[in-house]
Structure formats: structure tokens, C-alpha cells
Length: 489
Image (cartoon, rainbow, N blue to C red; front, side):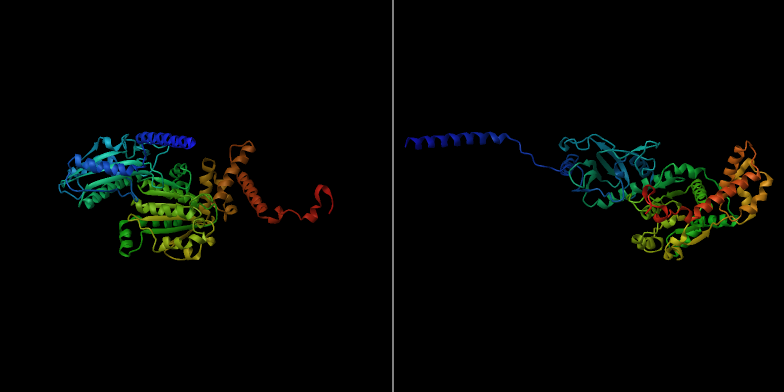
């Protein structure tokens, strides 16, 4: 009986201790996960009331598909405001004023730093690299108020949504009076168009490299038609393709409901001057104020395919709304993937063909046109014009090559070698002249003689003949070589 009473006493003490501890847990703070966007939405609703703005607030994510948050870029806002004030007629989305607001205390410091996040290139199209200059700050995080000429106001917050998940990143949430959402969208569209006009102005005369090294830009800029030694008829054929940029031709394409994209393929063996002509056309087009894309094939297994690189350039031409020249070497590498063939066909001449209102000229080269699918190569519309650039068959062109590559070292006696050099590509003339000059120095002469050029010509041809002799480089059979370590099998 005594033991039972002790057990009851212990139970009572334990229960009392538990109740005391439970009462102390009431002061413990329990955390519940709240999304930053939820805080912003609640803060916007409260701020709307504090500022006594008219209308029932409509809160939504600012559209971002294919655009940047231009409504938060001070440089653009000031330019748009100045344009709105100059207009006599009040257009949809015309701005009266804008101002940056203090971050409300109940927003818990969200978008309080005014951080710009990154720097932009001068055309507002991309992030900067260390070599870039005339850069601009991008959209700062912050809280803005907009007042419109039609008598209504809006609020917008640009902030970094750091919540876990795929949606993390910069975003903007806006609030407008119910019924004014279409005018807000018109304002955003006008801001985007202003940014696009600035981008077009900045991109005029620019050469952009896709998939290759930016150093190529300087190489292209330095190339002139003085470096191109080709028949006048060939140069005239290529120059005629620039007519795609003439307003009359653009109107004709439009009246026929044909996308304003012209595709020209330069074909011929290696070393005939196709690449030099490509670069000279690029430099010329840039000097005329057009946009140039030079597309390089990426290494295999490196993300984007060659065709995707080219497709990106064609779409970029449309977005630029500038006369655009797209340059491509070794076109067969870009259109040879069977898995991409259908989209290639549709893009070059079909339902997916990009249409640039200012015209696009695709100028490509190919050393091996037989590798290009006949549905592309032989189908007018997918390739509009094929222009052959072959080996040197004309004596006058051969003499021009010698004068070009020998420069001050050229003598009239060198023209006697022209018959010997006919039938060779332009690169052969270059190597003959360089190797001939080196041979002259070996002979302790500064003057390049005909015999130096003949020597160089024969050395180069002999080297080619050896390389073409496949049997010369085939290893002998194991039976003929014998066993390992000299043992006979």
C-alpha cells in the first residue's frame, strides 16, 4: 500500500513538471515560410492605400517574355518622359512623371539597395566584358511610381526573388487601377520600342561574331576589295545581291508575300578567294551602316549545333530591323545534320522563314557543295543563287595575283611565269610568292627572281603530289615487316 502511494506521488510530480514546461513553450517563436513576392504584393496593396491612389488596385507580374524591365531603367524613363512632353496629342501610355519611392518599412528591406545587378553594353542588348566601353547600368532594384497624362497612377517593384526553385531571379510586380491594364501594357510596349530604336542606332555598322572569337571583328574590318583578286564579272554578280536592301526590291518582296531573305552560295575548291571575298563584303556592309553577323561552326558536343548558331543569326537579323548581312563559311557543315533537315528546309524557304523588314542577305561559302542536300542546293528559294569561284584560268587575273602578292618586288619578267601558274587557286599564287621571297633570302638576294618563283612552284606541287600518293603512307603488312623485336613469324 505504501509503495502504491509513492507511485501516485511520483506521477503527480512528473505531471506537474510537464505542465510547467509546456507553459514555458508558449514564448517560443514558430517560423512559417513566406515568399518574398507575397511580402511585395501585400506591401503594394498597403502602399496604394497610403498614397490614396484612385481605383481598385490590380496587382500582377509584369510581362517579361522576350523583353527586359525597361519601365525600371532611369535612362529610358527620362527619354520617354521628354518625348511624352513634346507630343501635343496625348497618346495611350503617355507619361506625366515618374519618381523613385522610399522602401516601405513593412516591405522588410526588399529592393532597398538600388543594386543594378549588372552592366549592359551600349545597345542595351547584353552583359559587358572587360574590353567593352561606353557601358550602361542595367535596371536597378527599387520601388517606382508613375503618373500618366490621362490622370491615373501605377506602382511597380523590381526586386530579386530569392525563393528556392526554378523561378528565382529578378522580377517585377506592378499595380494599376482596374481597367487601366491595357494602357499600362501600351506604356510598356512604347518603352520597349524606345529601347529597340536605341539598340538599332548603336548596332548600325557593327560586326558581331557568333560562335567564334571576337578578334575576327578586326580581321574583317581590315579586309578591303584591294585584297580580292577575282574576275570583274564574279565581283559584279556578288555585288548585285546587295539589291536585297534596296527599298524597291523590299517592296517587291513584300507585295509577293515572300520573306525578305536572300540566300547566296559561293562554291569552288579551297584557296580560290571565297573567304576573302566574304570578309570584304562584311567590311563594306558595315561601312554602309548595316549589321553584320559572322557565324562560326561550334566544336562538336559544345551545346548549340551549327544550324542553331545560324538560325540564331537569322532571327537576330529580324529583331534588329536593320539591313543585315549574315556570313557563313563551309555552309555544308551547317545543314548536314539529318535530324535538323526538316527545320532547315522550313527556315530557308517555308513556314519558318524569318522575315526582316530591312532585308537579310545570307552569303555562304562551300568547298564541297556535293555534301549539301539537293533539296537545299538545287531548290530555288532555299539557295537563290550559286556563284562559282574557281581556279585561275585567266592570264590577266594571274598577273594581278603576282603583282598583289609580290607588291614592290614584282618585275615584268615575272609575267613570263603566268602560263606555268594557270589552273591553280589564288592561295597557290600567294604561297609561291612568299616561298619565292624566302628562297631569294636564302640565296643572299633581296631581289626575287623568276627562278625563285619557279623553285617555289615546283616544291609546292611536289609536296601535293606526295600527299596525294596514298600508298606512300600506307604501312606495310605485318607479314612483310616481320615479328616483334626482329623475330620472324
